[in-house]
Image (cartoon, rainbow, N blue to C red; front, side, top):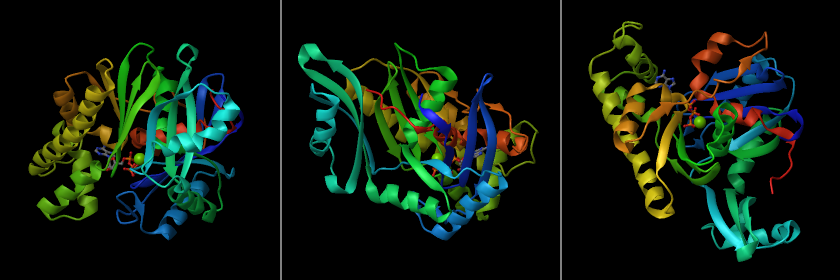
Length: 357
Ligand SMILES: Nc1ncnc2c1ncn2[C@@H]1O[C@H](COP(=O)(O)OP(=O)(O)OP(=O)(O)O)[C@@H](O)[C@H]1O
Ligand SMILES: [Mg+2]
């Protein structure tokens, strides 16, 4: 754990801006402030910010509605421009590594090294082989800078930039711990993106971004039923509850659409799992955890389970968070609980952190 105060976790997702502020208490991690401001579907499409003004306004609204005064925040990036690789380098001192890392990274990154920000974590030192294993993380500078600039325009002070997949892993570790002797997969299925992180023996061994998510279901309902986005979204979100009589009935073909699109998403996830299993030479995946807004869909959990043939569980990132703040809108927080792994993972970051080495 780092020093200093917790940063405000700010997740700029394509469906909404989500902000969380937590503090450590004797009862555990407590949520003191929470903000959620939805974004219209055309504001961020396919991970690209199309309307910066709308995002800046949403950030400002999220902070003011949540009554957050602190400006120092943590952001994260994701998408296919983020590269995470396990690499092997010769044994060296931390200082040598700092000097060498750009060169080492260049061998593994398909972009011009001047365009990327490189970070790393030492996973294991193997003096007997004079080698060490690193987790190399590279993200395009312009993507990081674009997000930081949005935050600065909203009068925030971005201090840390993380990677979506790692923020989710942090929350999972806080809630459940990472199994020491098992391989698990944690999948965050959002609106337009899904991130897959395979954690083997407590360490991230493989990550991949899939450009697909819950929006594909909403769009298909829109198209087939000829209804506006909001209506299609409501049909999708109410479908499971409607079947049990807990929500107004939805048109019967909504179920077929949900089944067919979740199946396609599950197939893409399975392709990534198969790639990992074929290339890693490591043991099987013991369990899959699904989080993100789309993990609310029982059909998605079932579809992934049918293909992967291992137990699949919806993971609620709020399960170990105590709500403390009197100003937290409890209804909104619980309604959006599944959508908060990134914002909560970011809120766990501190102003100063020691590099794990
Ligand atoms: N109860 C529900 N049933 C089905 N889908 C839901 C439900 N609640 C939220 N969703 C879906 O979850 C998605 C939003 O999830 P999330 O907040 O994790 O995504 P995001 O972070 O905004 O997007 P991304 O990370 O893809 O840019 C939307 O597609 C939304 O329709
Ligand atoms: Mg997201």
